[in-house]
Length: 325
Image (tube, rainbow, N blue to C red):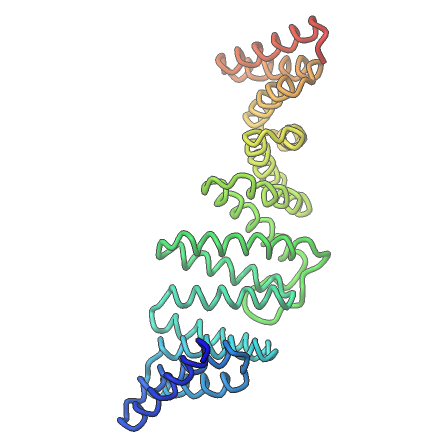
C-alpha cells in the first residue's frame, strides 16, 4: 500500500469513528486528510467531494480557520481537475476566511497561490496586486523567506505585465483599468520593488526594475521620478561594474537635471559621470565633463567636490599624455 493509500485508509477510518461519536470538527480534519491523499494519488474528483464536505462541516461549526484550510485543499483539487476558474474563486474565499480568522500567514499563503493562478491565466495585473498584498502580509509578521518569494514572483508578474502593449481587461478589484493607470502603477511598483531588492542586497535583481521604472516614468513624462530611477540605476550598476549601463544612465540623469533646473542634481551628475568616464577609459570626454563639474560645483560652493572633479580631470589628462584611450 502506497503512502497516499495509507493516508486515505487511515483518514476514512478516523472520519467514521469521529462521525459515530458526534465529533464533527475531528471528522472534518480526517476528511481533509482523505482529500489530500486522493488528490495525491490522482483522483481529484473524489478529492473535491471530500474536501467540500470538510469545508461545510467546519463552516457549520463556525471554525473559520479550519474552513479556510479545507477550502485551500479544495482549490488545489479543483485545479488538479482542470477547473481553474472554480479553483481561483475557492482560494479567494480561503484568503477571506483566513483574514477573518486573524491568520495573516494563512491569508498570505492563499494569496500566494492565487497569484500563481493569475500568472498561469495571463492575468498579470491581478497577479501584481495580489503579490504586493502577499509580500506586505509576510513582511508584517517577519517571514522574510516568504516575503522574498512573493517579491520575486512580483518581479516576474511586473515583467510580464508591463512588457505587454496594453493591460489585460480588469475583472474587478483594485488593478488598473486604463493604460495610463497601468503605466502609473507599474512605474511606481517597479521603483519601490527595486528599492526593496537593493536594500535586501540583491542589487542585480534590482537593475531590471529600476530600468523599467525609468522607462515608464518617461512615458508618463514624469521627469523628476525618471531622474530618481536613473540615478539609482547608475549607482547600482556602478557597484556591479556594469559600466555599459551606468554611463548612459548618468548621462540621461544629467539631461533631466538640466531640463528641470535641478542645479544640485546637475552637479552630482557631472561629478559621478566625470569619474566614471575616467574609469571606462573615455578620457577626452572625461576631461570636458570634469571641467564642467568643477565650474558648476565651484559656483555652488562645494570645495571638496571641486577638488575631486579636478583630480578626475588630471587623471584623464595624464592618460591622454601617455597615449591611452
